[in-house]
Length: 316
Image (cartoon, rainbow, N blue to C red):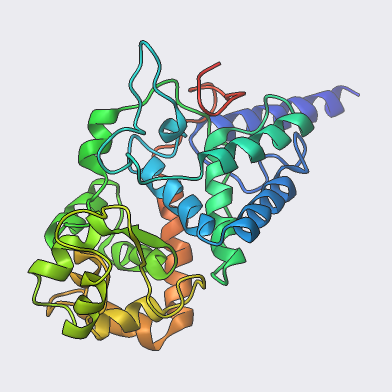
């Protein structure tokens, strides 16, 4: 009996140290909320069935969360009388979306296991499940993140690279998060799905020379020099609702929608990786999955840091 108690205490201590040393585990909820992953997966599938674009939006939400003080669900916090969050920062305002989907999924998870699963983990899993649902690669999501108690609008304004970024600015931005040049080119492949607003690609279609002229003209017809800021165009003109490697084929043909996209194939150091991903979809999938694991591990709150929010929009 004494040995059994000792073993039990050892296991508890080992679990506690794993939770506090910043290491995440795919099995984190296996005993505390075994249904969590299937609830989240079902919620993501339902949301994408309702609106295909939502898959790209949920993937992007994770990116915009992780690039500001780490993957801590800070991006989900609403402004209130005494607090200004990240939602109204320039890269996010009228741009990131999917908050209601996260709310709905979180409510179902809370019903199954109250106060157990963090909003940050819901966002990380929703990003993975979105990519997989649309035909992309699977990766194991480390879990055990906790939710932040605050957010930083100022940091969101400078940490998230805008669509006007050149290659050196992109490299600097990703490097600041501990992400490599290869991670940058692979993660940019998430633009194989989703839509962008006219205001995001206007400069590229009117001012840049590194764009196919007929492609630029087709976009100019829907996105004038002024006005119609919210008109949408697909980031991948070929298969905008399927996660594949055709984003890179577009770049080779100078049909990247954003200035920052086409910067990856512009007679520079990224060209060879773009060519490799265009010719080898499985290589792209492997590198994308690996880069997503790295990104989702940016400065997570673990152990007793932060909290597990009951409502993702506000602290407990």
